[in-house]
Image (cartoon, rainbow, N blue to C red; front, side):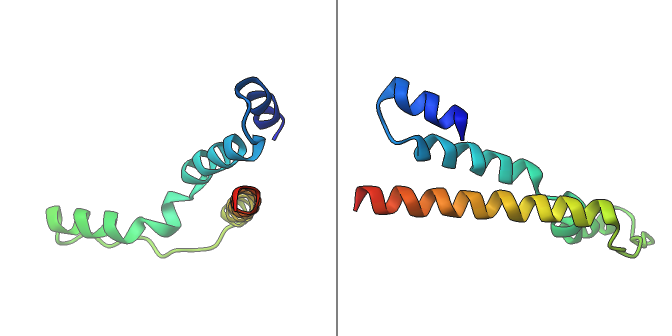
Length: 89
């Protein structure tokens, strides 16, 4: 948010726009790959190796913490986008 304030002041636009961009990039890179995209990876692996058996998914505390962080970043992104929307409407 501080970087958004600085960049917004330098380029003379709302700091929430740049903050929303930063939160969007953070959201994309923070998505845990083992929980959301594992089914497509398993399918591609099965096409190459039909005897492949994926490991059962267990919710660990590490993945619970990372999921919580993803949710917090996603909520910050949504809040920034709502603020930007109401600023320009």
